[in-house]
Amino acid sequence: MIREQNQLAKAPIKPITLKELAAMLELSQSTVSRIINGEATAHRIAEETQQRVLHAAALNGYVANTMARGLRQKRTYTIGVIVPEISEGYSTTVISGIEDELLKDGFFYFVVSHRHRADLLEGYPRMMLARSVEGIIAVDSPVNEDLPVPLVSISGHDRRQGAINIELDHDQAANLALSHLKSLGHKHIAFIKGQAFSSDTVLRWRAIEQAASDLHIEIDDRLVVQLQSPEPGPAPGQEMTRHLLQGGQPFTAIFAFNDVTAIGAISALREAGLRVPKDISVLGFDDIMAASMHHPPLTTIHQPLRSMGQVAASTLLSLIRNEIPHPQPEAITVYPRLVVRKSTGHFTPQAEPSQTADPPLPALRTSESGG
View 1 (cartoon, rainbow, N blue to C red):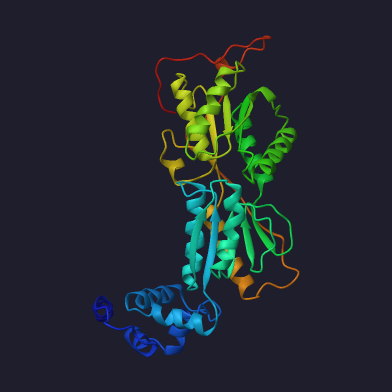
View 2 (view 1 turned 180 degrees about the vertical axis):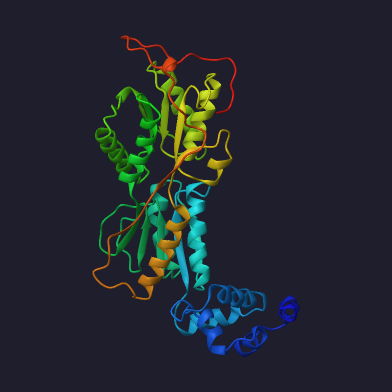
């Protein structure tokens, strides 16, 4: 192993040959070739061996041979990924899963973000095709035209020929969330819906309405608001929570569309002198990395974002290789789980909203403390 590391540390002047690379790694040329050509999984080559070969190939300039392979086979080994935005949270976690899977198979990828601009949403698929991508992954981004290459859509919900959707079970997610709040004694729950442009908004809200009906939880329309701003980050959640507080209809819990919105909600509640969760419980959605590090740590519905990216990439590669039998599935479902942290707590009777015709807001406080 020491000899191998010393050899890897000395980058050659000219690209290494397959024979030389195999000798350096003490592997057969056929094993190295299968890994480089993206055939490792079919031949059941260990993950550790795959990573060792790919790492050595990159360090020693074998990438030039990989490019030559693509030219010989008239292939690009390139995937296009379309996302709404590149910011901390949903998209970046999904992209990390996509990257994991594509790198194992020797594929390259490039990412474009459209920021919900119609012209970019329309133009990006064409731009990717002009660059000879072999397939496209669309993350929470509608692709409305038929494509000559395979398409996998994450949270797309568009049932049409030629596309496979990777979807969360929103019915189960809504049931987990509302069952949790009900078990803590919350009856007056405020809801922050997603923006109209998000592909998950309508489906998730329908699931919430059904779960509320099944659990005998009344949804008060005065406690339902919808994110308006396309701005990433917690600011839209802050804005909508201030709107809820100003509306005069009391509530003891907030169920936010995503974790970033929930973090914004907590900030607005603190501005108003309210404590989380003692005065108001807050429940998020997604379980992004920041959720566990926030103060208080955020209770949330875990959406397996990284796994969704991995499944999307592996499904797309199978489509490219024509390994999925026809008729191909319209959707692949993944499942959520509830992660209980410290932003939700038991409802206390003294905080119960008044049942008078004009109930007061929860008492504002001049100081705050964590959950």
